[in-house]
Image (tube, rainbow, N blue to C red; front, side):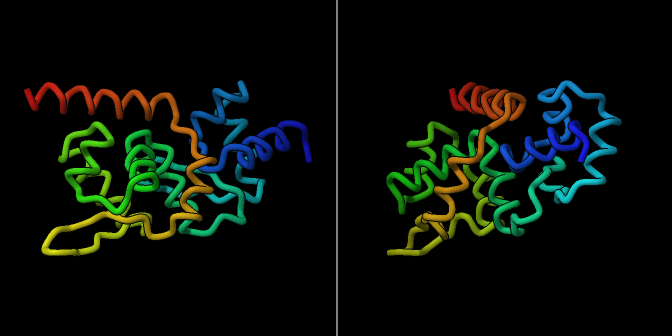
Length: 165
């Protein structure tokens, strides 16, 4: 295996769910060069939530979907709140995560779709609970929100805060 290909493979193993543009920036390689070597490697390209993520081939579909979401700062914050304090109502979760209910709703739809979070009904109220807390905790440790992702999430939080006033 070439040195370049090994660098790309090592980066994908070290940072599962990495985006193409992150690979190019982090490794200081030409986009065409990264694209060529990715085709030759045993990595899985998964188009999730508007971006292509690259994973080692031993990650199953649940892991890939979970990591794609946990790389978003707000989704990771919601999961962290539920891990620490759950089960919680949607309102309590939004408050503890420091986000608007509408922002929680957007992220929650995806977290439920990927089976990270479940909605359980108690006393006529919805409570949010992690579906697989141990497995989710392992992935949360591996997921590092990207700078562009953080900027988008923080901008969304700022707009939500301004609209609430």
